Length: 568
Image 1 (cartoon, rainbow, N blue to C red):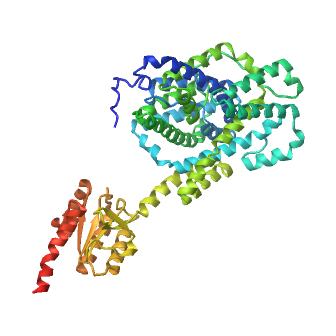
Image 2: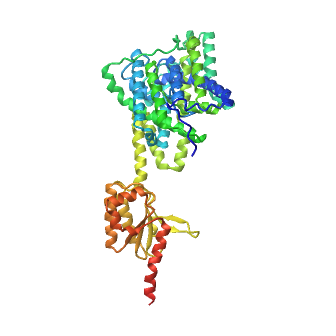
Image 3: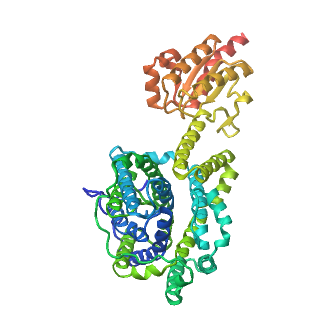
């Protein structure tokens, strides 16, 4: 366990302090690298979100800087994210036209709602909720988002409007409208894909997405591509974002509240998972609840400055890490560069062909399809692959927001399945004296007449019946017949009311068959529960032992007089 950094009276600059003076230049270089990679990326995310292009830059200005100052993670980068952008787009397009002032206001209010939920989670110290989204369902969820995002860009890459909601309909309409293809637009898209894909294979450290965007922007201005049927971004207003309350109709508040909950869950899970991964990599501490404050105020700032929800981004975090960034100083450098772009360089962005951003987003979507993760799940946990596939299918065929709900439900189901079907074993000593687990069907005994039964989970209403069934089977299959049955309870960290009642019934049944139940390795809090429920008295206070070896010694000592009697 590493020593936690000394906290300031107010949680400020935890992701920056202490500053490694020798590494400042590397932090600045990492910040410049992040800006070079993230600027075209967040511009692409505005297409997923249905927002004006300039709002993408806003996501990596004030929100990014606020988290850098208020968060505890030294590595997490906050900004626009494909998953939350896709959820937002799916929820808001039925309410307003994408990109319209009404749509932007709804997006701002959605960010405020999400920030409020994150702040409430901090007050209630709910950072632990991030643990309830399993890695398996996150793989499936992000894969589904990747498929949806990539399919949604096909029409734009070919030069005609996207038609239909959902990947299946979008692919059908894209194929049906191939006759409308603009060959010039398709050539631009192909060139962008070629530059990024081949460039990444040859020189990974070069920001090829930025190279492609800048190259296309120069070519568009020099060759007047808009006159040849290539749609461009057009005039982009420069300057800084303005603080304003996003005014929406009262009836829309209830309509976006559910979406905000879905986004809150995704932000909580994805941000905590990313922070946790990098904290483990560098053997550092971070505080999920402190990060909730940074994420909350980042989203509130986004809602008040005309942009949309922000999230902890695994891709941007990896960008900074690969460039050598080791603290939030790199992210503050990025925010400074974005500020300069907003003040002086937004006019040239108007020449960027829309197909360029469609191609960039298409590649983002393809990279989200985690085929490697799916293969690993297949090889190690085939059943969990089904769970990941169901989650991905829900996102693709039903919707992103519904996919979040499916992901949460399946994560809980996985947890319940593991606790409902605990790994219960009979324990025997191996040749070296080490205790080994054997299947219950083996009838293995630690000594003639003594079975050591390890229950592998907390005892609660869903699995309490398993304990009774297991002990019945052990008793019936025992050869020679049981005299003692030892419950090895180190994995039982809680016993609920139903579990207590079922344990009582099991003890009484064993007593009727002349079998003594003994218990060992009981956690103190569980022993207190057994005392309160009268189970200690029923089992017998003298039948509780410290560890499994104590039980074996007591059983052998207790059986010796019986053996002597038989020889007399």
